[in-house]
Image (cartoon, rainbow, N blue to C red; front, top):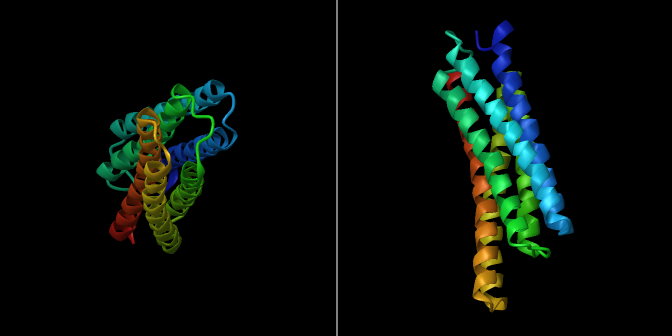
Length: 205
């Protein structure tokens, strides 16, 4: 059986992780757009990241206590790790914005924050459809995540060109470049979830 009875516990935990990731992405967007009360906003995201750690630990603990799993054990472990990487990336961005006191993020950073939000929306849909065995929908949302990651690549490149052309303070360049690159890397991790989910579909269709 792909999913029945007690096996739903893994997918419930994956859903919990996905919703938590989406909430943290939306909090990051608010931090980037408003540029005020940075320390408080970053701390709120840190709390969500710690909640994500707890969900990841529960997935691994459950995996270690389960003899028969609904999908391959390595896929369950890998999904937990990658989803944890997404929220870790979001928290890393928020921590640096707060630490560097970046109150005006710039157009590219705002666009990357939006792309992270939309990508995490898609991650939620991928997990929900994987649980429901709606394999066609998993593929549809995975394709969209791939498109969004390509868009994030383009946004990063354009943002760096603009940064190098218009900013003269070396320290400011270093800070903003690091933030944008971390944001783009977070969309990469969303793409990793999509690719892994497609692999699970291939094995179980």
